[in-house]
Each structure stands twice: as structure tokens, then as C-alpha cells.
Image (cartoon, rainbow, N blue to C red; front, top):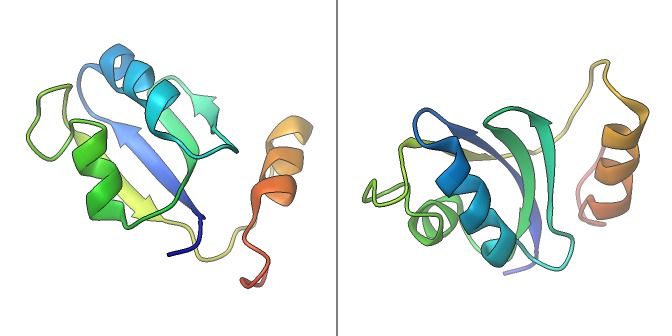
Length: 93
């Protein structure tokens, strides 16, 4: 499976999930949107990412992982730059 972008939202223990993201996200890493919420690049499914982050079994905390299929909105320039650089080439923006 090719790398894609996910939103990870921690609903508890955001620090432990942040630490897990450091070693789990693909080469593109992750981008902190706000405390406890990230974009993450990962080679796999949302279920696999949730498992690796310790969310599915709650070993690192609880939360939600969902793939991003497109995006729009307003935010910090560096966030849009991160998305542009890491966005999968086969998905529309």
C-alpha cells in the first residue's frame, strides 16, 4: 500500500500518542495541527496505524485515526506546505 495522509486525534494521553508518532509515521513524519491532533503520513490502513500508535488497544491512549481523501480550509501556511509536499500523487487535492 502506498503512503497516505491520516488525521490522528487523541482523546486521552496525547503525549504518549505523540511519542508513538515519532517512530511510527512514514518518512514524511507528522504535523501537529493543535494539541492532540496531527496529520500523519503512513504506509498502511487507519486500523494498522491505530494499532501501531497504541490506540486500538488503548495501551498509549484513546483516539481516532481516519484517512484524508481531500482537504480545504484555512490554517497556518506551514500546514498547507506540509500537506502539499506529503500529499499522495494519485489523490486529487
